[in-house]
Length: 409
Image (cartoon, rainbow, N blue to C red; front, side):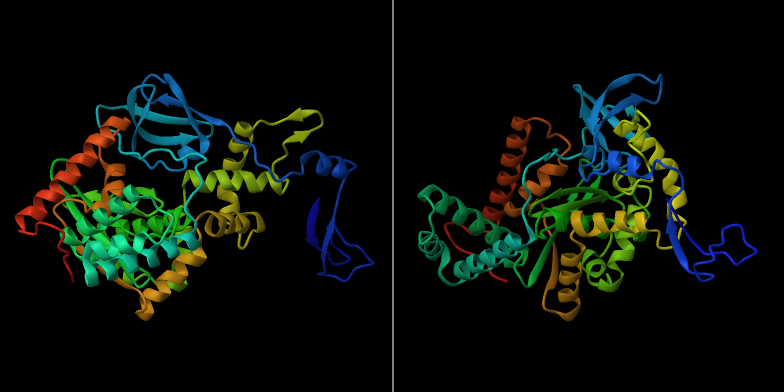
């Protein structure tokens, strides 16, 4: 199948029945219908990535293709009971170095249903109501209000206790609401890292996109590798301890009109872009899965697509490339919601409030365990959570706030 403009009469491809310069679409040969009928389909093929060590080219296992999308150069993950540092990918192979470093990659969520953007906003409104009730009437008022919902008594007391400790430890400024984006900054001297816990409770897709956007801007300012861990209720950015940014200013200065361009730039060279381009190149028949009795596996399709990608990126408004970016930005990263929240920040409807903490607050425990280097097994996570909670309670006791009192702004 071809698409071209009609040549003048002296040209090689001139059709008298059409005007010179008119855009034409046609086909050559007799296989067009067969190729079309044997290659159409919207469900993409997937495959496992073989993992090899760079020294010795030793095979150490396989990774799910979607899991590889979460990895950046330098990330450490556990495979077959050993730790490996991710270096790069070539086609169907990923190359790593054995390392004694602790794992830095968060848990793989696989097919677990993510928190949606709309439900996330409802949770933020719920948090605002809890904070207001705590400040006005204390924990008894919160428990009384929660009992109006279909919750058992243990849940009522656990939720009340968590938010009571949150406000007593880090004040109401540490809780995100519809009109506030809360960020915590914590220093980890043992790991020589600076962690930013962003409580953007707008859902998994939003956080996937916003974390990538914010990491892109932070990396530009600090010229450092930024580690990212994403959850439903927020995400964590981690920098070397000797790097520092004004995270409030970074968020406020992001231009909502430049979000799409910035996200496209952040995707350059990523495994995520390579995978989605392969899927769209196959859908658009740039790469044929089946041809004259031969069939290409998903791995072979990936190799073919990577050879085409650099060429496609140099073309202006190339349809397959544009659809690849559209699918990532709109369907996976929820760019429309990111633009909406950033416009609210620019107009002042949502304010950004960052504060330094000695240890993660109760609402940041989940985000902190994603970045904790000694969390591999479930019992490790439990031990880390208990340590975080003990630090919070020690800090509250040092401040002399016993009982059920509540800290306010």
